Image (cartoon, rainbow, N blue to C red; front, side, top):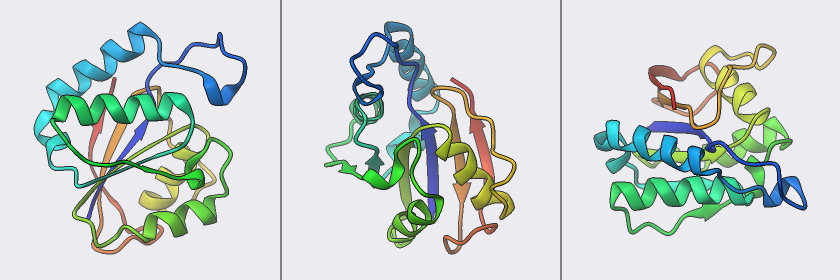
Length: 154
């Protein structure tokens, strides 16, 4: 399986709650440029999963629209900023039969999840700026078994 682990694009702070924050115009442009520069990678995606937060949903929609996907995304509460790492891993393992999965989520979860998947240790979170993507390959989705193939910087 190839996992595209993506942090949502740049979001503004002028919202009634963290949940409701939306992408900034700069965030939208940055995500669009990243997708266009790596279109082949994003066109291979079979399943899209994102957190229920607005900025993650908007980021997933931008990817799907730019890559020409007609995929119904999966909204999962297991991938919110403060989600439990064990629950996130269990939710991710459910997709291991998929050949290419895009997961759009948040810090601090994404940094800890990336570190756990690649290094087997979540104590040293992977730095991930808004819009960054890690392409990680797996034979089986298990902590420490991910092989980092590519890092895309938004």
